Image (cartoon, rainbow, N blue to C red; front, side, top):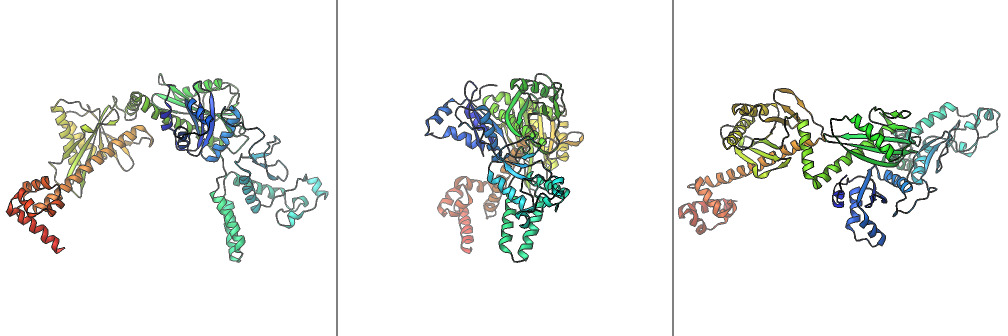
Length: 601
């Protein structure tokens, strides 16, 4: 990868939550940090005057910035913790392994207890988390216990011991917090049905709980028990505003490598996430330059082998977007739903962000490569015979049929060439006829280019659907250019792209750079045409106001505007100033007309 200046790296960072990593000239990790907004936080290191000496020294050493995007700030906090423990960067405070984050445990028991813990014991129990604070865990457990009465004792509630009458119900039973499974007052099936509902709450599905709370709140309010109703309302607010589900919620996802791929015409980007006990411990994105017409499956296979060797991965399971051939003994999972799919989506998101940043960086550092890639992509997407280095776009402008005009904008190598923009006054069409107007301006434009022996565009874009495209085609046919210039139409409603003689439109991906170039052309033509149209309408209105005065014709009106610049100044001018331009007789008519109007107002 070529060296990218820090300023360029900063300019392309996303404004998303995530974790950033600083590397020095030897590619050794200096620091790991978290951010609610990666762009703002990382940029602050290079814009502030740091009072602390070590920070100044660290910033001077930074040569490369790497980051991992995550959905929330809480996820960033957890990921930061994992990466600091793994890499022990020089400028980070070392985190001790015994300072771990809390989990919620559903104990593997006949009547499962649910409680918070900081230790994961491999006894078949279920663990959910990790959470960023014990307060969060306790809030969630309090909500669960207020809905579902669960046991809190640690008795061995085997059927034999219950039948032998070894246990008696405790205070929790009498308070209504437990239904007394210790005395066979609650069956195992009913208890496990509660546990199934609780699993859904922990995973973020609050629908049934919210419904219960709202009914309870209304019932309490109806009984005039407002303090209790307010307490329930506060719990509802906590449930509705709280995002329980973390990036990874299941610690059973252990020793897994996740790979995803995003590719374009010239490059592929493979993201790798390594998971341990439900947490991300490593992220890396590999950029691959295509040599031939390699498939995504071929490139992903090569990347998996390369990355696993580089990081010495021993994971026995891979999460992949599609099936590929890898070494024997590895379990391949193609996630469709749930936590596993969410992890794969996160990997794809990081690959996409990496690709976008590389594009932005190359646009600054190596603009020719960026342009070549865009042109190659447009050629492929629009099924062209050559790259559209020169594109022209046409748009008609008329409001309520008045002052019809058209605009032609020109893009060279994907960028506006404003000196070549052209306006057209519609000459041969009466009234608001978009089709005929388009036919006229396209004919005039390319008849002139042919007459002056100037280069023709590789692509013409028409703002409109099949009707406008057909009208433009007529002109190209008359000029003998049909088949020599590629032409398409873009309809605004669904951004359909129409080709000549093809009734089925093309729909490009909304994120496609080819579509963005076409939209930019269309928007620029619209802006350019509307601006000209407004000027023309404004000028027509001004001339009309002056020419309505006895003795003032078009030539006299133009002379007045040239001298005074606006109608407002003409109205404010003295009789003597007006006479210097139009003579005493016309000046008197002007002065009397404007001042009689003003006095009547």
